[in-house]
View 1 (cartoon, one colour):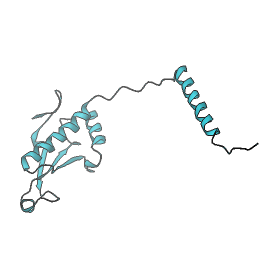
View 2 (cartoon, rainbow, N blue to C red):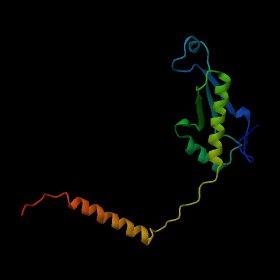
View 3 (cartoon, helix red, strand yellow):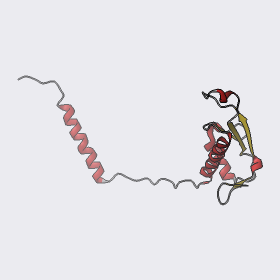
View 4 (cartoon, one colour):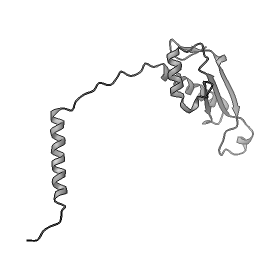
Length: 140
């Protein structure tokens, strides 16, 4: 079991790792060794995720979520397979922790203070004066 938060842990059998070749430049090694990792986690059918966390995870995952509810994370930042595996797992755990965090409190509406209103109007008067002075000069 992999502990995500004190109340949430996911089983290692729920994760599936596929290894593929990294894209981009890399010399001789890149065409022979499969160092990139594609981590798959079936969020929709996971018995270890509470329903609210599952909903938020699906929203947060965005493009990384397939139509079947599988979160797919590609990791190819590092040169070794082990570091890419650790990177992919850490990114998944971060995503789940973010989904498990409580939502922020609702915003309280506030009104501008009298002082801020007066400062705004004073600034508008000054700007108006500057622009008025830009007009055509009349000779007289």
